[in-house]
Structure formats: structure tokens, C-alpha cells
Image (cartoon, rainbow over all chains, first blue to last red; front, side, top):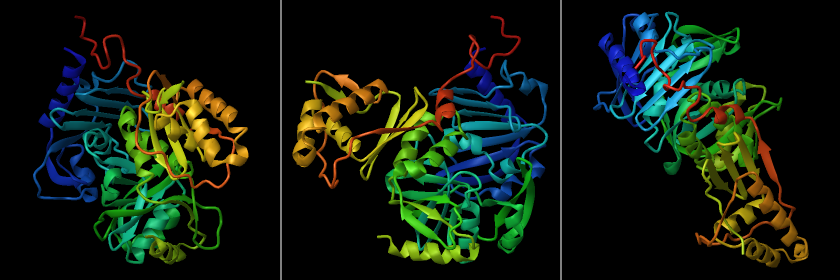
Length: 323
Length: 141
């Protein structure tokens, strides 16, 4: 049996043990999502954007320690390992929790495996390991960024973890803004568009109480390097639009929202690093799109200030100055 | 005459407003070139030789005309050493030369960033066995 056949066999076995969960859209990609018995009770559907459109792809989410499935894990399971070619994408990740994702680019279907204990972050962002490969042939790219907007014009917020993207996103949502995501969004650089992937947001403990009123349920508490993170589903659906500015987010203690022009290198580093790190093997296709995303709109550095309540006003005033 | 191409294998580049950012999969580094260096890069991309690029810029910045040829040559040598440029026999004419909005010439430099290194070096396919990962224990044939 060749490597490709093993990987396709893994996908086939995953689908054979799974049943349909829902049909979801990920930007312009529509996919049927299936789950096995272990994954079914996890609540993945709460983070998915459901649709009745015709599906192009299908994803299965499976769990457990099935020896037949696990025979395919790499010879060195302690290392990240990747296979990526024109037909298949496979990604084995040993830490922080084991994950195995395989996507058949030809048949447009893939499966992602977790151990019994599925990380809450994965429940808030279902199928994410497969999406990078699934949208690779399109003009879209999955980016580690947040996006908020008004009247169809969005600010793309770029920054590493703890930079304040989620706080800024939720502060704006609470003020009535639209949002496309607080952690992962879809970008189409050639059309200067941002689109949502999931209806979930992630919050640290300090922010959970402040923004609890926005959520229809705090559906999971996860662990992020020992700190609790709350995976919330907001009570309104995300939406997308045109990117009006790219903002590198930094918190440097400004008393209020402060925006200054930036060089591309100032904000592209986090965008490239944190986006490509989620999909080893897809870097050569993702990087040109992410670089191009940096010039969808003018770039700035923003300090969101010490008072979240002041963020919508500050960003709103800034948005109005943009052409 | 020395001509160079800027679309180099194993790299992705993007021209911003007065800045060029290049990601290099081979080294795992990414680079920022601005602002004088971006003009040199655009001159080469347009199909000018190194000497023609220096002459073009010397006319734009007459106060620095004496220093520009040596600085352009050194900058190009630096980009070649980092495999961000590849020499070609014939010029590849592309697009128009940019309108120069830079007020003052500055000695061109390349800034390099290594925070992508671990990620870029992981790609595209690594850590597979000779049989090609994954292979199962019963694959003896």
C-alpha cells in the first residue's frame, strides 16, 4: 500500500464511522461536517455557520484511540510531521494535544482525529486543520487575525496572542459593530475581502465576565498555557466585508486608542508567523496570500488603550477618516 | 551588464508603499527593504542593469550621485548573497519605473527577521521515512 493509499484509507475509515452533523460555510466554501460517536456530543455545531447551499467538500471529525486508525501515526510521533503534495495533505501534531488531519485535495474530503479529550479550542474552531488545505486552490487564506466593521467596511486587527484582538473585537461588538472573527478569519487579498469562519470567540477569564452578556452561552472553558480561556458563541452571527485598514495591535499603555502609520514589516510578522504556524506544509501557498493581504488596505499600528469601553469610539473615529 | 530577476524560486515578495517584504522559504527568514533599497529592487525588477539602476537613481538624487553607484552595487551583492536576486543573461522588462516620492536618499539596507525561521524550514515535507510517512508496520513489500 502506498502512502497515499494509507492516507485515503484513513479518510475512508473516518467517514465510515461518522454520521452527518450539519452543513457549514467557511467563506465561499461549503462543506458537510460529519462526526463519530465520540465527537458528536462535543457541540461542534455551535461554532459552525450553517447553510443550505450545495457542498463542495466534506469533513469528518473523529476521536478515540482506535488501534486500527492509530497504526498510521508516524514512526516518530513526538515530532510534527507533514505530507503535502498535489493530491494529499497530512499533518501530525503531537503537542499541546495530539491531532492528525488528512485532506484529499482531489476528492475534497478530509478527516481530523483527536484523542478522547478534545481541546476546547478545537471545539470552538471545528475542522480548522483541514480548512487551510481545502481552500488552498482558491483566492482565500485562513489568517490569524480579528476583524470588526461597520456598514461593510472592516478593520483587520493583527497581533500575536495577548495583543488585545479579542478584547477590541468584543468591545466593538458590544457597541453594535459587525465582526468577522476574533482569532481566525478568511482573507481574499485580491478582492480586499474578509469573511468569517466561525461564530465562536475566545476570552480570558478577565474578559469573560465583562462580555458575558454578548454570549448566548459560555459553552466551554479551555486551557491556554495554564490560563482558562472561555469559548463563547456570540448572540449574533458574524459577517464579512471590505478591508478598510490593516492594524497591528499592540498594548503599550496608551490612555486612549492611538493609531499611527506603520511599515508593512511592523504588522506582517505576526500575521505570517501565527497564520502559517497553524498549517505546516501550507506555508508556500499561504505566504504570498498573506503578504498580499498586508497591502489590501493602508497599514497602521494601534494601541487600543487601557479602557476597553473607549475602543469602539477610537476605532470608529479612525474608520471615518479612511477613504 | 548585470541583470537580475526578483521573482526568485523559494521566495514570495510583495511591494508595499515604499517597502518590499520578501519571505524566503530556504532560509526561513523574511526581509524588509525600505525605502532606498525598494527603489533599487524596483529598478532591477523593471529590467534595468545594476549600472542603469544606479544611473537612474543618481539623476533622481543628484546630491548623492557620487555615492549611489557603490551603494547600489553593494546592496545588490547583499541581496544576491541572501539569494533574494538571481542573475539573468537578458533583462526582463516589466512594468513602468516607479515615480519617486522619496525626498532624501538613504544608504540602502536589508532588515532580516528570523521569527518565521522555524516554521518556514518545516516546509514543505519533512521527517518522512524512506518509505514515505506514513507507513504501517505491516508494509514489508
